[in-house]
Image 1 (cartoon, helix red, strand yellow):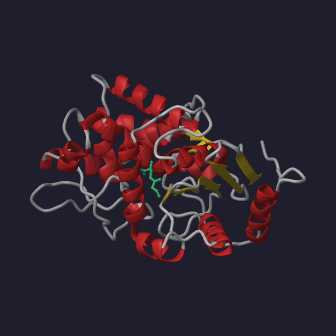
Image 2: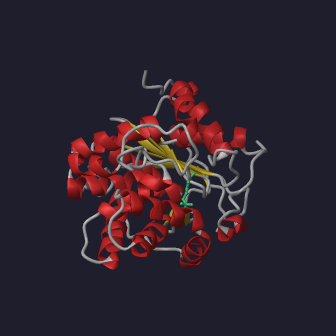
Length: 313
Ligand code: DON
C-alpha cells in the first residue's frame, strides 16, 4: 500500500509539502507505540503529509492514503459531537477545560468534582464519548462513526484487530473509567462506555482524511469537500480552543509557543492541525517521542509553521 506521491507538476503546494517531507524522511528517533501490541506491527518508515484548503482541494506528499487508526485524534471530533448533543454547559459539568500538564493517560481527577481535566486526555475522552447521544452503546458508536465520517467526507470503518488489542490491554483506561464512575463524572455501564471508546480509537483514517477533518474545524464546522455542515460554528470554535490549550498533552504549551496552531496527536503517529479560516493538515509517521507524539510529525509542523509564517500569534 506504499506510494511515494509527489505533487503533480505545476502544483506548487504539493511540491512544498514534498520538500518538507523529504527533508525529514531520514530524521531518526522514537519508536512506534508498543503498549497496544497491534500498533507495534506498523512500518516505521511510513510518512505522509496532507493539507486540505477551505475550497476543498487536498494536497499531499508521501503515504497520504495509507490507513492507520485514528486513536486520540478522534478526541476533538467526539468532543464536538458531545457539544452538539448536550451543549457546552452540560458537557462542562462532567469534564474540565484546563491543560493537565500531565501525560495522556494521567489518572488525576479534579478534587471535589471528580471531573477529568479536559476532553483531550484519555479520562476526559472516555467521558465525552459517553455523552454522545444514543440509547445503547451500539447507537452511540454508530453516531460517532457517522460523525467522524461526516468530518472526513467519506464512510470510515473500524480496524477490528486494533480494537481487540486495545480492549485486551486497556487496563489503565479501565481503571480510569472506574475511578470516574466512583467519582460521578462517568455514568452508565463502565464496560459499555469503554467499549465505545476503544472502538472509536480503532477507526481507520488516512492522512488525507485528517486534513479534511481538520479543515472542517478550520472552516467553522462546514466540510469543505462535501459542503455539509457537521457542527455549529460555536462548537467548532470551542473544539479549536481546547485543542490549542490541551491537544498536545504535556507538550501543549511548548507547541503553542513554537508552532502556534491548534493540534491533536495520537499514538498511531498521527497529528492533525487546524489553522482557523485557512486549512487543515494531517501528518502520519509512527515513531513517537516520550510524550506519545510523532517525532517526524512534530518536526514537519515546526517546519511548515516557520517556513510559511503560520503561527497564529
Ligand atoms: O486510550 C488509549 O490508550 C489509546 N487508544 C488512545 C491514546 C492516544 O492516542 C493517546 N495519544 N497520544
